[in-house]
Amino acid sequence: MENTYLEVPVLSECIAKAHHPEYLFWVGCLGSFDDRAKKISRAFCKILSYAHIDYAVLGKEETCCGDPVRRAGNEMLFQMQALTIIEMLKMYEVKKIVTFCPHCFNTFKVEYPDLGGEFEVLHATDLLKQLLDDGKLKFSQQVFIKKNITFHDPCYLGRANDMYDTSRYLIDKLTENRTEMKRCKSFALCCGAGGAQMFKEAEKGDKEVFIERIEDVIETNAEIVASACPYCMMMLTDGIKYKNKEEEIANYDIIELIAMSL
Image (cartoon, rainbow, N blue to C red; front, side, top):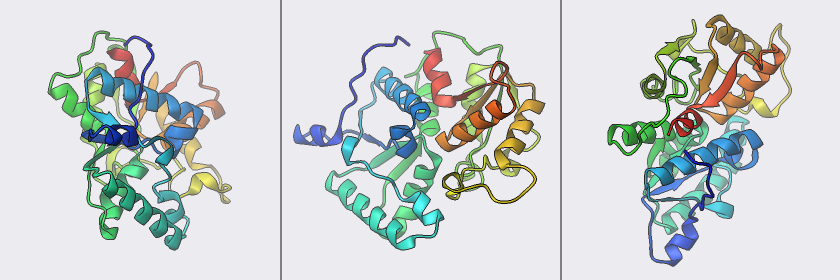
């Protein structure tokens, strides 16, 4: 895919022109503010534009979905945040939400309905599979066909929502050499960032979770560890650096792998 200028549509501007996009792309906090995750956001926008998907983002109107504060125990703040967002999305008549953050995905799909927020919610991997199956995405480059790729299951896709196959389906479209870690799918080890753990100091113990997980990756001899969550990416990258494996193992989101293959 050519690295060209990309204009991302903003929902409020679309509505002002009496146009209601099919999808709201919920970027998420890391996708908006973390420099590494911003690259995933850009790659996803490029894919959506490439496939001629009618979408928009909230831009400056987007705030945190509330997942971290609920996990940290502040239920009142979560509900205040969620109700404000639900009211705004209903005002804009949003019907479909797509996000690449499993934490946002789980919050919108599982938790917002309890507060009156009923939306069709897709994780980015779901939409990418749909676009591939419909022929709207076609790989022009087989960049990773011979690469040994392993996949780390995000907790909020895997154990929380029983979504194991779609990510692997996408990776199998990119490489002939997908390798599973010994702890995978429902037995996968958390990256260590979930449950608001990313925002607090490590607790006492013999080894931090992200180190334990990157050792699983190293055992596979994979050249790439693919992830589908910006929190997981942050922790896996830290693990790769901790083990001094930057020249041997790369960490990419599945979205980035697909964008580089178009």
